[in-house]
Image (cartoon, rainbow, N blue to C red; front, side):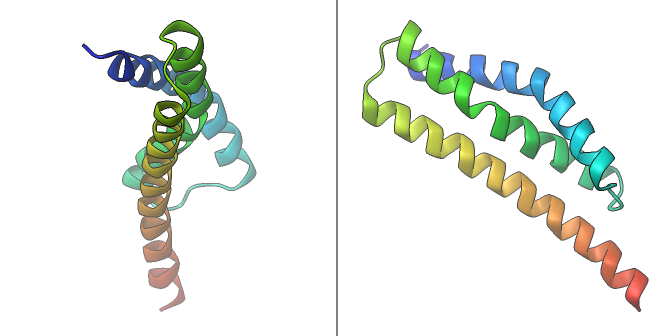
Length: 101
């Protein structure tokens, strides 16, 4: 396996673990009304956003990846987070649209 892939996988595992706490706190502040799919995408989006820092730190200090690779890893993790949170917003908007009708 390439060092970049290992850094992404290790960062994702750390993000999935820490994402539980971030998603819980976010759901406590603003409840999720979009159902189970919205809950899943909310958790995945929170996990991916938390995973950015561990991924970069693992890539930098353990595998000595260069600046360009670390920036690309960060952009990739942020893009994954944005896609998941966008899908979460779609499910939340459907609930709002149904309730307003």
